[in-house]
Image (cartoon, rainbow, N blue to C red):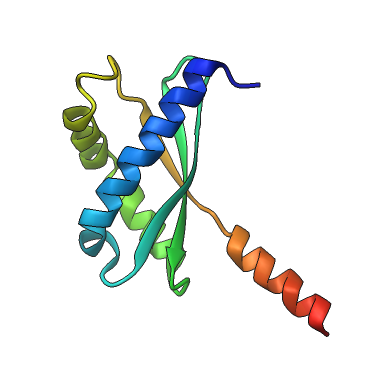
Length: 112
């Protein structure tokens, strides 16, 4: 169960990370589109699990690994952007959100 503060911070991070990946996606993924689908934040607001959807899905795992390798840079940029709204920027952990692939697979199975 999330508190109101956790929900507000997670939505703020989702919005700002989404903007960041829109403008800087070419540095991480070339011509791929990166979408921040969900941000889940710990109760102490110290760790944020960020789920990314990457289109097209080929080599999406490598893209997430590239983003994970640059977590410090991303956290620093978020610190500059959110310095007037958050006192502490949480640590980021990036994960691949494969829910769209799962939905496509279920639809294919139902068609057959």
